[in-house]
Image (tube, rainbow, N blue to C red; front, side, top):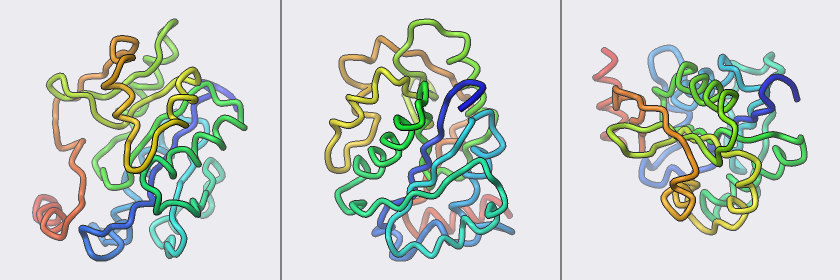
Length: 204
C-alpha cells in the first residue's frame, strides 16, 4: 500500500435478476456496462481496486484491463447471500492489506467518474477525524462511499442485501462528510432492460 492507503471495492456480484441476463456484459458503445465505472476507478487515485464477482461470471467486461496491475479479481462464493456478502469479501481482503479505508463502488452505476472518486480521496486526505465520506445529490447520500478502517467491524455485521448505505443512515450519520455532485446522471443505475435501452438512447 502507498499514497492514501485506500482500496476500491467494486461490487459486481449481483444476480442481474431484474435484467434477466448479465448486465455487466451488456454492450454500451465500444465497451461493456460493467467496464465503465471500473475504468474510472482504475484511472483514479485509488491504490488498488478489488473487483468482487460471482461464480459463473464470464468476466468478459474485465478483459480490457487484463494488463493493468493495479487491481485484483475476487470471486465471492457466497454472493447469493446478498450484497453484504460480496462487500464483506472485499473488506476482508482490504483489511489484510492494511488499508486505511475502502471506497465502495457499484458496477451498475456506469457514469461514476474518476473525478468523483478523487474528490473522496482528497477529502479523506485533508480530514482528521471522520468515519465516512459519501457522495450526495441534493442532500441524499449516494455511492460511491468511502469508509475508514474504523467502520470495518460495522461493515462485517451487515446481512443479506443490506448495503453499506444502512450504516451511514444510522447512528453514525453525523460522523461523516459529503461531496455534493450536481448532476444526478452520475448516480444512474441500470437494473432493468428498460433502463438499459434508455441508457443507449441517452448516448446516441
